[in-house]
Image 1 (tube, rainbow, N blue to C red):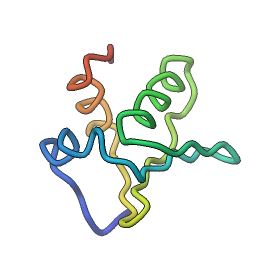
Image 2 (cartoon, helix red, strand yellow):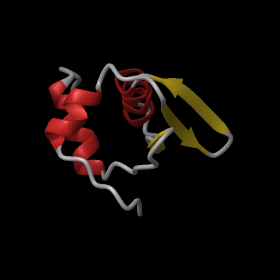
Image 3 (cartoon, helix red, strand yellow):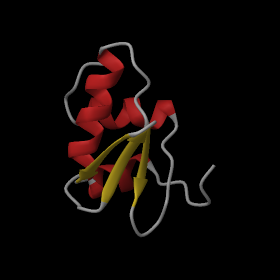
Amino acid sequence: MADKIYSDEDLRTFRTSPGWHLEEGQVRHEGTLEHVAKIAHERHARGERPGHIRQVETSIELEMLQLESLWRAMGLPV
């Protein structure tokens, strides 16, 4: 578990910030938080694990409830 837990408001603020990674196994994507969250959502919709989202400067992990809240804020179905 990461040391820093961001609030839902923090995550909404970071949506367009670059420097985020999505990792699951050998698959890795980089971009804005919104970009990698959309890829995580697509994976989840296909029944796959969404993966781990980390910020380059500060490694964080999003709990599933936080990720679902972010998807809702982005207007994506949960």
